[in-house]
Length: 375
Image (tube, rainbow, N blue to C red; front, side, top):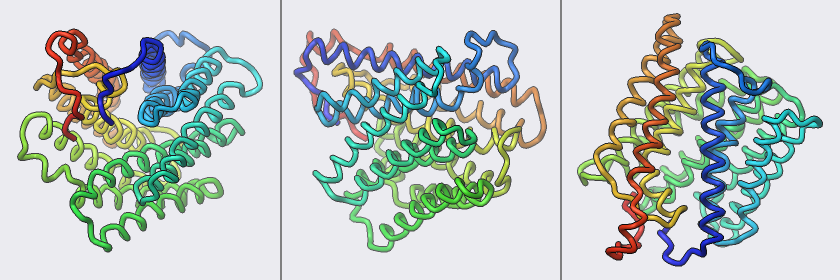
């Protein structure tokens, strides 16, 4: 995604508003997560603790991904996707009856998926199909939630949404390596197994979780083997930071897959916490850290100055997750509790560093390049 030079004030205001709503969903989601993990915080809203998963997967990540897709297409109607998801989050927090919140979030995810399907029509390729299937997984996960199915089942589909979206993006960037036919077939096999696991989870949650875990492990191994990140470590600067963040995320994706296989069928408790947050935090937020210096300038049309400060949240994310997951697996309650709190502190530090690295005045003063940043 390139940094656009001619964005109208109305369009920029809409992007900033949607980004602010995504961050709001993140803040509420993290607050809910701290309550669920055991911190005695005020609930703020009666339903807030139960909305931790939907807030993080949809209210933050869904709005953010939907906004990125809308900016990439340049079509006004595409902004309806993240907007509807944000409205759904507000409705769910307000406790509106009749499942209005989940319904609006489902409708928003449908719009985002239609954007992804449009990309397939414009450029039929394995990576666009993978991202479109990720969008479909999000729609199904939201629909299951709306229909009152157990949240752990919906959470597996939300996980599939994020993993397929990111895997598709990385596959696109790996095309310059001229992947062999075998590597492409193995990618299809791993992602196909994930699809089978997700479908199976609707009928037999334990079997679906086990198959999905195996698929996540295979996808992680594929990314570690074939992603361009391994070849970018020696580049230095921002390219090295991005590569290290990606590789760390792939490691956590593999850990999450193994834990899902070992503890297939759990729907709560420390093992469930360890498995899900290895993926949703260790993998997904490592991807966010890696791409933030690229995506945020493109979405806001504001240049960003990369500095070594971005390593601070990246390193602390690994440490806090080791503490949390280790506490989960060893039955060490205090480590689990403080690991969760440090997860929140790390994400807040990342937000501060990202915002303070934006340089809105530098572009007007010095005419900075509008070429896309290295990935």
